[in-house]
Image (tube, rainbow, N blue to C red; front, side, top):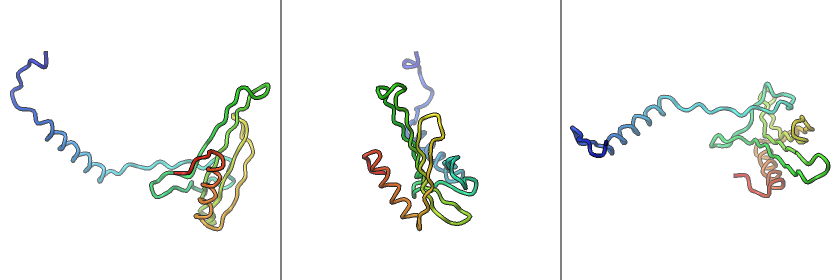
Length: 137
């Protein structure tokens, strides 16, 4: 058994762990992790020249919520709600994209321009609170 084996030298597991951590920290500095961008919803009219806005921690202002109620009606209720804060780079305009409908379909959508990024994010947080009952964190 390994527990009964005689080791030729003392194992310095704390030193080995610290050495490994330092090597990984050097690798992170030299090779930063690529942050994957959230794709702009395909229904947005200027998706090719736009990007989803992120906060200072690189978390996107993008969500996809679903509501399923199999007791409702003959076919049940299978709904989705999509919301994104989008920056259209060519015209430097911020939009809120809202898309809703039955799961499996494109549904309806609305693109609302805002005078500033802050106004758009404020409205996004307000709608999120209304739809979910939670604060956007």
